[in-house]
Image (cartoon, one colour):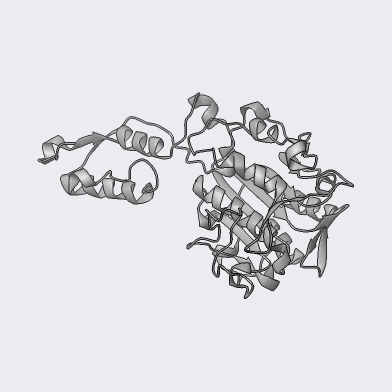
Length: 346
């Protein structure tokens, strides 16, 4: 790109700038009108691991794997609530201190260098989860630990741990029931705290946690039926314990192929679970969800939207202002296709 000199050449239209931002958001939109009719303007994720102790390593790895995926697909840490009941990365039995792996080949450290845990250890309680979902937190709780959603928010809620028929245990000390969870979602709906929820749970008898939902716009998926166990996928001989659960493993296998610009739909993901491989029966509940899953992009829940309205208004800027604009685009989208957007203007 040639260096631009002289303010006379720097009359650029606001249309061009917004178009660049639109492209940089890395969303492939087949139909612009349908794109703006999706109904949501922001994405959030609530990721909950309810287990502690070293032998539940796989549950921490499950949660951190989903955390890594949603961050890669565009949901920032500021819009992720991460709850980890234990920190196996620092456990003295961890031969790879400071790491958590979700595969025996140890290629990906899902603990990473930039993890932001919002609730850890004994902060991971039923009360705190319900307060986060419903927004009923004390004034002293910082913004970083709040779910600041509204009626235009799509929310991914992922939970993993040990469960049974109608409950999920929290650290072997308490449990959340299917009714309590359903009522929390209803409070969210009444308080206009979500547009749509995608609820995913990986635990034994997971489908029981979907049965009591009664609020609109909830899509639910569970790793196992009532009376059925959810199994670990494999263990790492060096670590000495199972490193990931089977249902989450195959969920991640699919998500790893998804990019922010992918056209994959939720139906593709939900139909990808093969019982012979997962070793449990995936339960999908769609009666509360009004959209056609064949038309719902995966990134509506696992990614982040940046809806913009394209207008055509000319804007006169000088050379310094133009550089500032390009630097702002660079900073905002440095992880996307405009990484070197400003280099040609140095």
